[in-house]
Amino acid sequence: MKALNVCVIGTGYVGLPTGVGLAELGHHVVCVDKDENKIHALQNGQITLYEEGLEELLKKNFSAGQIQFSTSMESVSNSDVVIVAVGTPPHPVTHEADMQYIHAAVRELATYLKNYTVVAIKSTVPVGTGTVVEKIIKEQNPTADFDVVSLPEFLREGFAVYDFFHPDRVIVGTNSERAQSVIQTLYDAFETKPNMLFVKRESSETIKYASNAFLAIKIHYINEMANFCEKTGANVLEVAKGMGLDTRIGPRFLNPGPGFGGSCFPKDTMAMAFMGRQNDVSMTLIEDVIKENWARKKQMANRVLNVVKDIPDPKIAVLGLAFKNGTDDCRESPAMEILDEILKANVTVTVYDPKAMENAKKLIGDKVVYASDMYSAVQNADVVAILTEWDDFKSLDLQKIAYSMNHKNIVDCRNLLDPQKAKENGFNYLGIGR
Ligand code: UGA
Image (tube, rainbow, N blue to C red):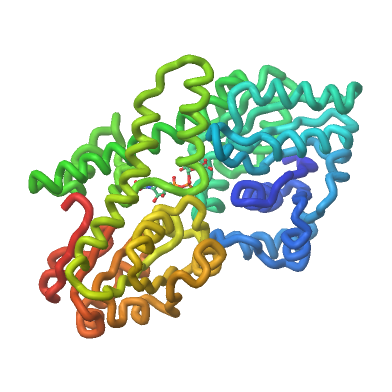
């Protein structure tokens, strides 16, 4: 395998696992970030975000000299591939993807381009961005020899390392054969060759949004079915299982819950809807899912508050703050949004999350009491609300907490517990769609 020189710009949830993964494959990687604290920590072998298995791989490749960290883009001049993985957060007013970080990064990297380089855009960007990036580079550096490729990322937070090494597919958007062969070399080191699809740049940019929006719609669909099951006596888990056996539907992303969250689905569905409006294409399905997904968080909060409405000064225990299991990320977390709604009712809330306590503190400070473990969180509580699907919570000893709680109420927004066992231990148990 031919080792390439790769520069990854942005060391967030996409950039860092990508850089570490490419280093593990044998490429020479420099990860660049403007944030001096982050780079300083990484240079000292400290991990800056939680992803299973990432810390070990980082340390291994850092001590072997396969990966380096820098605040400067200098290494671009020596790179075969520059991967842009900076954030594209939603614009606060229009909800379109905010491109300022991409534009700034591209303006700067352009000035360092020397030999032929592939500039691969990994950040989720609006359709047409490749052309804009090309123009910026030409303006900054008219003699640069380069190709701009769309290389969207499909890894999930919490499973980033696994997904990096087992991608369902690698989508490469470019018409340049030269760029195609460089990207092919980048993935040559995979033991099992990933399924690679070479398409037009605009198609590649669209595939990313179309995939995320589709998955968001799938989740919302099963949540609506869960509401229906609650009224009719059906069990949504059985319904999802039965639907999933149809290979045309598939079993994944049919887990009902408190609504989708995280830094991708909410942002990308809004950006897709914006692009639809911009191009005068009706996207009522996506628009509706965005609206209903917001409403769902409020419905979940009301479900919790309703259980304790007749209890004076109720105490609520919240288990789970991260937007899903396996991550410490609380951005756009359904749990945090439900918690916000609950707090509006002036109740006392104790919270616990196995990984996300520090990030939650940055967002809500001292509005809640932070417990050291799940059992202290539920002590004297009138209701326990399970908001994130951590495995730890599945093993909650119901007999034990039945003694320590003031009232035996459970609102299980992730269907982690066995309703029968909860009932046997005297709990009033509310799950989702069953
Ligand atoms: C998502 C996509 O799954 C990745 O393919 C994509 O690369 C990434 O966005 C991105 O664009 O960067 P991620 O946001 O990490 O990944 O998380 P998911 O595992 O997709 O979950 C998103 C939300 O949907 C979470 O709140 C999760 O709890 C919820 N969800 C997921 C459900 O409620 N039910 C399900 O069946 C699956």
